[in-house]
Length: 121
Image 1 (tube, rainbow, N blue to C red):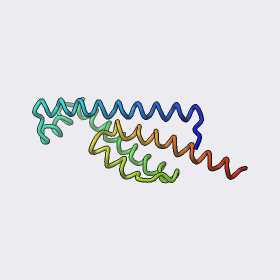
Image 2 (cartoon, one colour; image 1 turned 45 degrees about the horizontal axis):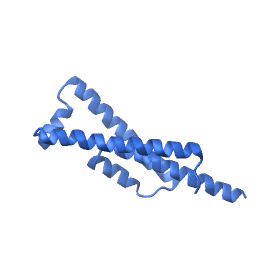
Image 3 (cartoon, rainbow, N blue to C red; image 1 turned 90 degrees about the vertical axis):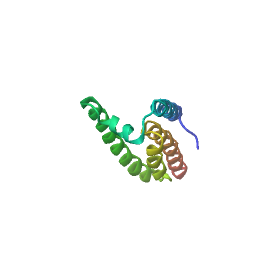
Image 4 (cartoon, rainbow, N blue to C red; image 1 turned 135 degrees about the vertical axis):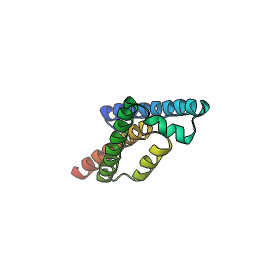
């Protein structure tokens, strides 16, 4: 499978964003745990003020739409283990798994493009 320069650039961009998403989630969740946030306090903090409600619901709606995109687009491209991206979102962060999916999607698009080229020859 050969990726075009644009596909390779997008792949690496999404992969870097994914790593940044994972690291920031680890750092700030770690800080919250070290500050003594318990599981009840952690969820309560999502909805403390009006601003928290806006940001939390914004993230939840984006995660819902992104999860639907992962399932629909992934199936369309014949990608496997789509459930793992969604499951990992709950264990890590959607800021990690969604860009990771987008990186893997670039690989799937390159594979699909290569297969189409081979059949045309």
